[in-house]
Each structure stands twice: as structure tokens, then as C-alpha cells.
Length: 207
Image (cartoon, rainbow, N blue to C red; front, side, top):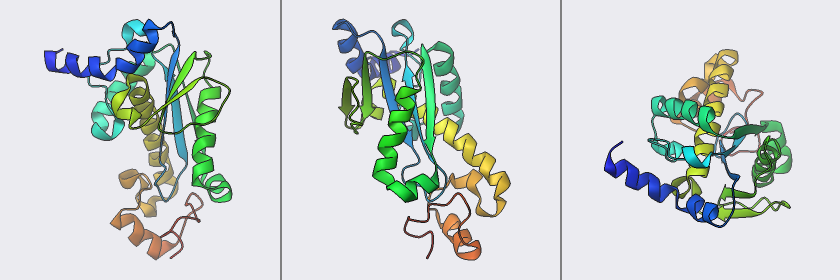
């Protein structure tokens, strides 16, 4: 591992290192993906990294990593972490309760699904207002190793789900844009109308 990469990872682990030094052992990172999509669920992941294996080469915010690298890092994370979980909220629920409430709901579901109860939870910006000790971190997926790891898990799982959905609804090209509002996606919406996994409350889906 190059010195530059080591320095970057040291910076990425600063929140965790401070918490470890203050007696927190099981630190969970949580993040969600798919918030801005026109189709498919919101997916959240929670992960507790092992203290002695928290340095995962190339770990970063999932949006800054190529698909191939995300898949490799995903494999490293799930093989070396103490535990991880994923949760999803369907388009129908998003339409029913609102995006913001669905976002909070999916984060809570991911946290509650962890096999190990965390001592503290690091969340990217949002505070789900649970009884657990929670530390919201703005741009957490760029600043915390635990949140970055959660963002990669959530992204990989959701992308795989949308690729699966592309086989059921091939006309929309979900394998290419994963449900985001690309030009191609909007063109297919205009041509075919919304599918069963589109978010009908979102602008651009019905018109």
C-alpha cells in the first residue's frame, strides 16, 4: 500500500480512532442509496468494521469508485467486518409515507438488523432518532471509514437488485442507469409509462 493511500485511510478513520480510544468497540456505520431514483427501492446498509481490519485499501465514498472497484471492496468488507446488514423500502412505501420518512425508516431497519448491537452508530447526515447513541456526520461517506463501507455495501446490493429488475422490465434499461432519471430512462418512461417499481409521486414519472 502506497504512503499516500495510507495517509488517506488514516484520515478516513479519524472518527473511528477517536471513538475506539474512548472505549467504543462496536462502531456501526450506516448509509443509504437510491434516494434520488425514479424507480426501485431505497436501500440502506449498516456495518461494524473490526478495529484491526479497518484499513481497507481503496475504501472511499461509493460514488467515487468504479463499479469494478466497488465489487472488490465490497467482498473485502463483508469478509473482514464483524457483521453487516441491508434493508430496503419499496417504491409503494416511498409514495405512501414520503421520501424523507422512507429514508429514516430504511436506516432504522438496517440498524435493527445488525447481529451485534453497536455501541455507537455513525450515520451520513441524518439522525433517525433511535434510543441508540447516534452521531450524524455531514458528508459522512467521505469522512468515516464505517459510513464509506456501508455506502459501498448499499450501492452494490441495490445495483444488483436493479440489474435483476432489468430482466423483468427490460424496456427501461435499469441495468444501465439503476433507476436514476437519465435521458434514456425518461425517454422510456414517456414511451411505455411507469412500471410497477416506479415511484409515482416523483416528478417526471407520470408526465
